[in-house]
Amino acid sequence: MSQTPTKKREIPPFLIVLVGSFVLYGIFLMFQPERDQIAEDRLPWNSKFDQQGNLHALGMTLNQTTLREAMDIYGKDVEIRLFTDHDGSNKTAEAYFPVIYIGSIKAAIAVRLKVPADELEAVYNRGTKISPTTSGAKEIKLASQDNLDFLDKTITSVTLIPRKDLEERAIDLRFGQPDRKETQSDNLEHWFFDRLGLELIIDPEGPEALQYSQP
Image (tube, rainbow, N blue to C red):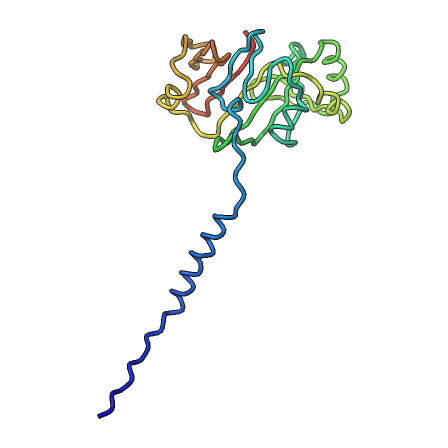
């Protein structure tokens, strides 16, 4: 009596595709380029003073690094503006990076520029547009040439604004305990970390602000 040949079981097509996908994914992982390592001096909790008293923060050295050099670190997407009080006094020049990444940290950065008072006055008079701010101050849009000239101005202070709120435990783990805490005229808590040159502004209704400045 002849036996009926055993029918060979076929592998379902979807299983072949699935296995093939895993193999290709494994090959991709083997050959993908390594991610650039984040420089330690760019991390917000690694700011420090050198022996000459210069503050190094977020990859920059205050009163030495220019805006152009900061753009080499954080990209060309930057806005430069002049700010004054409502009566035109207390003029300051600032540059703003709306989106930057420090490793997995997504944030914005604002830097204040060192510009002589007479130059600020001249730039103010050449401004192309004046707009009021929510605080009652004025924001002046610079003329094109002034934008270019400001690229070589040095940075005197820098403010980092993370997109995610910082939890107190995370602050303690990364930055340690503040030297002092003050509630100031803005009704917000200001935490001071003297060794880091850092003033951390705690806003319960918005993102924190990390301000680095020379004492």
